[in-house]
Image (tube, rainbow, N blue to C red; front, side, top):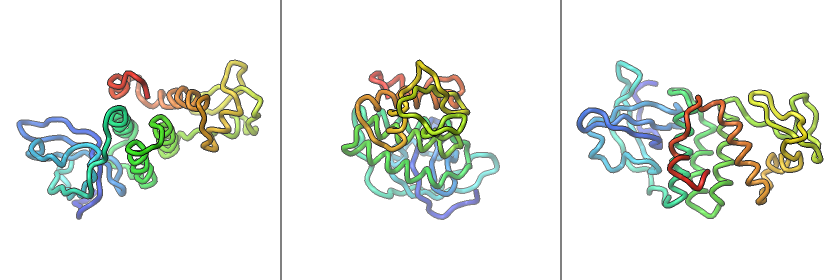
Length: 223
């Protein structure tokens, strides 16, 4: 990525660097996740999660860019309580699952929709499950929920287990086919919400490197 004109961005993560600076993980529509040094950034209140930004970046000599300028692109998303923890959760997923400087233009609108859903009336867990499925699809590990590993259409009366990097396999102790098909069609009810939470955790686990998500530990109610 070359030095940029003003680009839309979201801040995913920040940590201190030297006395007054920050290292940022920013998410940009054209460039995906990028690492950025913000010199003197600890004094800038704009450099916070869930605040839409315009940023200007300068390419450095290493893998990190330098933040030239940051301006507000709109009001901060009004996330509070459990919704705030859910926001930290999806940010952590992006930091953990996306490689730096790898464009994900289809994921950008899904991220913005999810933040809007967390700030709105959509049940929090449904917003998260929808985002997890889009994220897995975008990184090449999408859930095929209408066919099994042998390419056979899912039987609504059948039972299936999830096999990482393969798909759904017939298993008498598995998930009901009817509910898996409902998940594929985005038809939610309480039973499906419980199933989706368990299934998506199974699907994400192989890509997290065996390290727990800190945002899950913060949110004891579970996401």
